[in-house]
Image (cartoon, rainbow, N blue to C red; front, side):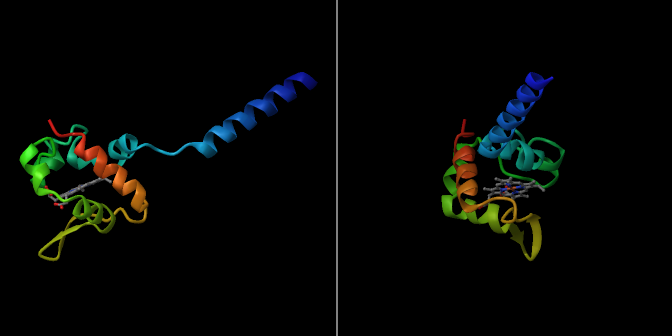
Length: 111
Ligand code: HEC
């Protein structure tokens, strides 16, 4: 009985430590928050992507048009066109560092 308790406590401590040090990677954030519109591959060929006419981020030309700072700003502040929201702001969910990691991830989607 005693030993079992000890093992359980150790397992719990381990799970807790693992949880504390866990930070989602940019790939996970992309999958969870962005892929629904931009597509896991960045091509935005899903229903939402086509409806919203989102550009293909695997296209080198599109990538060249995007500036890193503008992308970070778009992620944190959202995208509005003519006062209408095209993409919501993710500033509440993600830090600037996480937004920068996401930009690096998007850069990596280039074909
Ligand atoms: C509700 C759908 C939707 C979601 C979810 C979404 N986006 Fe967007 N995003 C858009 C639309 C629409 C645009 C504007 C059209 C375009 O640029 O092709 C856009 C534009 C962008 C741009 C380009 C901004 C520019 O300068 O033109 C970046 C970068 C971006 N999104 C990143 C992300 C990231 C990272 C996430 C996840 C944290 C995300 N988006 C989630 C719809 C979405």
